[in-house]
Amino acid sequence: MTPASLTRLALVGVAAVSLTALAVAPAGATSSHHPSHHQPKPKTVPVRLLSINDFHGNLEAPTGSSGRIADENGVFVQGTGGAATLATAIKKSWAAGQTQVVAAGDLIGASPLLSAAYHDEPTVQTLGEMGLDVSSVGNHEYDEGMAELLRIQNGGCNPTDGCSPAGKWKGAEFQYLAANVVDKNGKHPLPPVAIRVVNGVKIGYIGLVTKNTPNIVTPAGVAGLTFQDEVEAGNRASQWLTRQGVKAQVVLVHEGDSVSSGASPDACPLTTTVGKTIATNLDAAVDVVIMGHSHQAYVCTTTDPKGQTRYFTQGSSFGRVLTQIDFKVDLKTKDVDRSSVKADNKVVAATSAFITNAAGSVNSGPYTGATYAADTKINNLVNYWKDAVSEKADAPIGKITGDISNTSASASPAGELPLGNLIADAQLAAAKSDGGNADIALMNPGGIRTSLTYAQSGSEGDGVVTYGEAFAVQPFNNLLQAVTLTGAQLKTVLEQQFYTGSLVARSPLILQPSSNLTYTYSASAPLGGKVSNIAINGVPVTDTQSVRVAANNFLVGGGDTFPAFTLGTDLWTWSGGFDVDAFTKYLGANSPVSPPALTHITKVS
Image 1 (cartoon, rainbow, N blue to C red):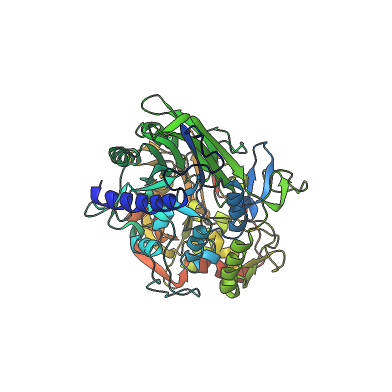
Image 2 (cartoon, one colour):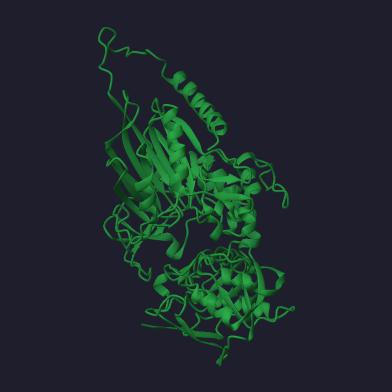
């Protein structure tokens, strides 16, 4: 912990808001309607937090599965999320004098072209206009490195691409927080905490990001940074706030849990516990924990180290859900009355939203729950940026014959995804030439951010894929590379789909194979011995043979905890652009493209 940085932020934050509060409601003011009778002073004051997470630059309403979610009654709703409807939801949920908008990271990064083309300045500007005040960082805030994140926070034009059409960037109107991220000197590049005055009481916010960030961001993005344990760093920040007399404390943490599919966003059907573990073990002074990262919606409770009830929540992703948290602060103790805490996840449905099923394959009529019209000011701002990028975004680059999905619902029993296989084939095609000499390709599923849908998203026509749609699938601008692995090392890579570290089991993370790679894995076999029958073009792979493997630079660098990739030799980098360029080139050369058969990986019990 760096006391100096904490103190500076605390003093600035409190002074700025306190002076405003004093100007609006002078101390000692009384009601003019009852000059001789004082009203009894309230014992508590209400505070409302409106929170979002994992917006990922989705200024326009997302399509396909990214714009679909189940509501409180289990009804699947298509047509949710995006900036303009979220802005209206915030306005309608706003309680004058007692509301603050906060977030739990991944607001930017892995964004559609509309935002990514200008390094996410459009999203940061738009969220500022919507009233966002503080946010934790997420792992994707580091996609372009610490220097770029500081530029987004503080202002200035991108050193490589220059200024956007809007001119010199002025910086974010909200404050990013990162209490568990330090540089090589042990300093916090971003403030650990922020103190705000809401309805006359101090609220302390602590920002945290998953300690796993170095494993899921390219090495260049996190160079020189250490990501500390979330609970340990959060507790140091909480204890510091307590010493400053700030009793009402909220943690914004970019880490969370998975839930059962199709559950109400207000339910708590957790299927993992990494987020709950953090929420349970944070210092007892922390009153509420707002989470992100897993793109799930839930409202849960746990008990803190002193046995008190503590809420922890998450609000899906892409603006599909707005989390409303209400509580009362005791004016004597200055602390949150835990018994007063209430939380509600509101589905942010557009007026055009309709009822569908889990797969989104039917339209059962207009959605009859709460809907939100597009906010005019935010809609105009989104359209400004849309016009700025339209020429490139709307350019057709190929055709498909049907939906090509990246969702778990479309996966084979072995974990193959139609879009994953297609991307791997595209990477193999590019890496066979120009000296790459690749034999196979592997694609990490986390790098596939959305599906390709057959229905037109604009006026391009059904089956037409635009550059903007392709970019939304692969928005990271990763490099396409190839390395040589032995057959034994390739097997180790495939074994690492099932474990991390020293044979520590994990949920299977199935790398998507090019169509010429086949193998079998056993669900019941021991870790390190699950994979067999590896073949390329039907020919068995031996332990000693050399195999040229194409992948993005994230995987080649050992990302997603595949350290065996780093054993590769004879590194080659494609000169044709980024990975998305290999994808668009393949779509153009092979149109129309059909969803590939999911027959490359065989799973046995």
